[in-house]
Length: 225
Ligand SMILES: C[S@@+](CC[C@H](N)C(=O)[O-])C[C@H]1O[C@@H](n2cnc3c(N)ncnc32)[C@H](O)[C@@H]1O
Image 1 (cartoon, protein in one colour):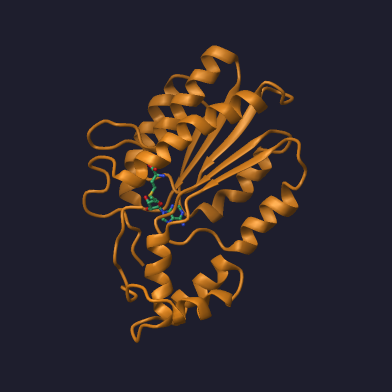
Image 2 (spheres, protein in one colour):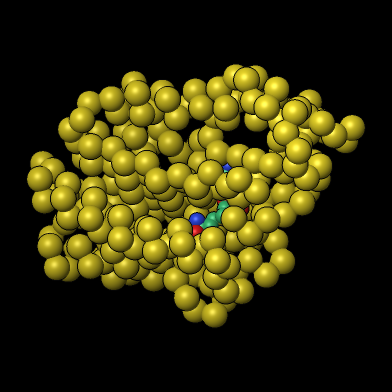
């Protein structure tokens, strides 16, 4: 399946990313400020589960560097630690991400870059956030984590209101249409359908896409979500 970040994705920011990053820039400092000063050890845990490269080739900050700047500011100005976790599945993107994270670590920001699937680090992050506010940023190009997994984290492991948990998730309609089209397409694969079932928490969506008029499934097609 396409990761959606091929081609020129990291050259400079596409329109959807401008919107996402504005949200993140405003939302994360608000959350950190409101919750960090009240938490036991003035600590907030942050996970960017689909981190990408961290910075665009033109030097503009991507989601990773936006969060690292917030963490650096909170450390210097408010004595609040924003402990950041970043996961990235693709080796090439991870190598760039790692360089960006190392720059901020050298300045004392508590940050960890992990190569691999977000699912593989989620439990570690939840554990680290025991007793601390938790901000999750999930920004996949395609399907996000299975619904059962998200429900388990949000409704079971973090069900208490304090310390608070915040989830900012990108649900790409382009990806949904692309993958949902597998229902009608002769090229659609059962594996893709099952992954979609997992994300939606059941097969209810199949009927919807079977009837809806939308672009046909294109295995490997990319979007700039
Ligand atoms: C939309 S891009 C991320 C953009 C980034 N959040 C930003 O705004 O700067 C999604 C990234 O997630 C990575 N990825 C895809 N599946 C993943 C997974 N299961 N776990 C971690 N990273 C994944 C892709 O390689 C890609 O770099």
